[in-house]
Image: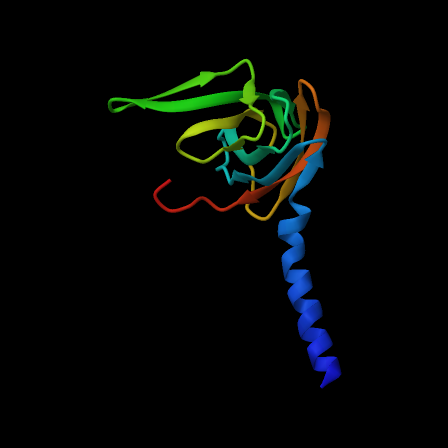
Length: 151
């Protein structure tokens, strides 16, 4: 009975590891839920999303991002203007003290992967380097997910 309980407890702990392993801390910043959507052959760009939390008392800024998976990575914002989606490159992304910024597909900020070197395939991961104005640099692993239907 003890072996069964231990096995169940170990399985439960292991099931939580992918979520915990997907969180990176850099000073007062927490970066989590980093993912990109799979692309199709011939698609030259993609997007990555993540959740940023500034638990500190001082504001910071995401200044730039880079990855070997693409020629360049740009910080973008997207918004609807009537029936037209407008996407614009941003110089940086503000992270006020105590704020949470969640990048989501279809709205707000995201990281645009320009000049993909290969299609992004569901199940793969790739590294991305983030550079913050005050906290410095950190590498996160981006998990490639299958496209959601309707998006």
